[in-house]
Image (tube, rainbow, N blue to C red; front, side, top):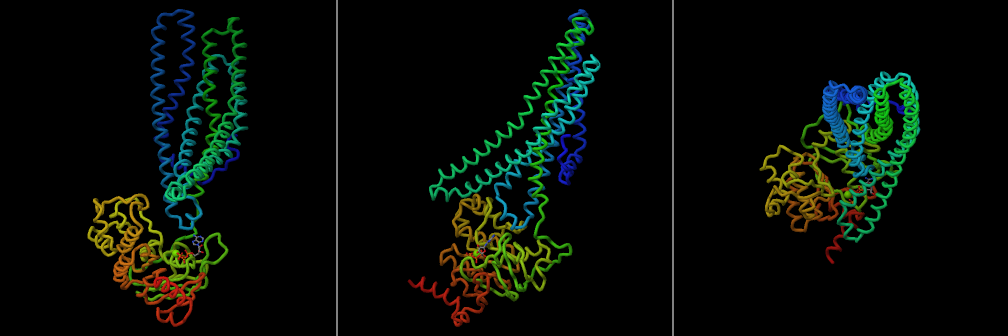
Length: 585
Ligand SMILES: Nc1ncnc2c1ncn2[C@@H]1O[C@H](COP(=O)(O)OP(=O)(O)OP(=O)(O)O)[C@@H](O)[C@H]1O
Ligand SMILES: [Mg+2]
């Protein structure tokens, strides 16, 4: 009756599978719960001999025996409660860990296009908040369906044993108590999903504005952002209160029902005690059992709420875990050697997911082994988009990108990415030591390799100026470094990878002219024998390129050497003249 609307899906089976792998823990938890339930029932039962034998019949031997029995009952109950908590929490944490690991590993494996559609803070919310809700669902479900169910069974046993006719009445009335639960439970799932979404939204907002703290301060937008944050928390507040109300609505109905039941039993049973049909002990033990029944019944009634809330969290988490990647690796993917390569763009058209317009149109470009190609053109022309296709950060919409005549989509992804070293337009570093950042793509690099890469990227001197040298921790995103220093570390990181294809997207744009000249020299040495794509706005930095490709509005406008292009009197010449004039004035 509770799960009428819930279809069991593979995702639910998977979670059940995690529990099954720890069946011994589950079994111990069940034993402990049985002990707790039995001791609850025993403590209700023992009221009868206490009242009848000690207080009414005044038997002295019972006075010695019964306190001892009570002690044992409560001792066992304590042990059972401890074991149940321990084993259930253990199971819960196993589930949390598995789901979290799965989710994180899936997120890591999803292509870049996924990250553009998702907010970082929201993903973090799923990793922390939603996974916890799933754990709560599992532990509440297990405790309720097992411990509370056992307790109900044992207590029903006690009441039948004491006064079966009244027990029959209590048992017939009991199902009534579940009606409000089913009625209100349906609303809970809807409201919970809303709460979880609101929470994710707040996380995402907090993440973005904390990362962007500098800009917020620069534009004095603190108060504006605070206000926006307050709006989010106000919304969460509203949703959570609604959630609490929906969850609590079943309680008043249940209380009234329970009160009516107990009142009836006192009226009916009391008259029978007065007329001598039952002993006082029997009746009080019966009444105590009925009152004790209330608690587990109430807990089971809340089960539906926890399950509905949990299922909506399961969906939020598994919608990502089961997300299909649009960047599949073929089963018969091939491997290529790490050596000099041709790279060919064959009638390549490309647009980003969800965009109508093609960003790259009809690109035909063959790059020879070891050739240095410079890509120039106006901002937004499509240069970065073009080089992103080589390591399959994105897939072409039409046409093919080939490495040594093999379509990149036929290559094993890790093998393909081993072929390409990237210096991206934004220098992205991790909050780790300089050493680890440089050795990032080559964890087995020797100390000498790292020093050599740092020297070649003209980074060694500034690294040694730090008191901790290579062990300096550079802050989140490398925040403790200057723009130029970050760029040089990124170059060192690319150099150490020693890949046959090199992509330098504005790699030296943050350096001053003299530093740029030196790094440029280092890069020139490095480009020997490597197929290189060099994107630059400053045309002075591409003088050593074998060929220059001018990209305009996603199309190749011109190709040729510096001199050839100047002669053509086209886009390149205007770009050149613009910069020449700028530097001359
Ligand atoms: N992830 C994305 N989703 C949708 N559109 C994008 C995305 N990245 C870039 N674009 C669009 O693609 C076009 C080309 O961008 P691209 O970054 O390739 O230009 P670019 O030539 O590298 O420019 P710049 O010299 O400024 O770096 C731009 O119009 C941009 O708005
Ligand atoms: Mg770019």
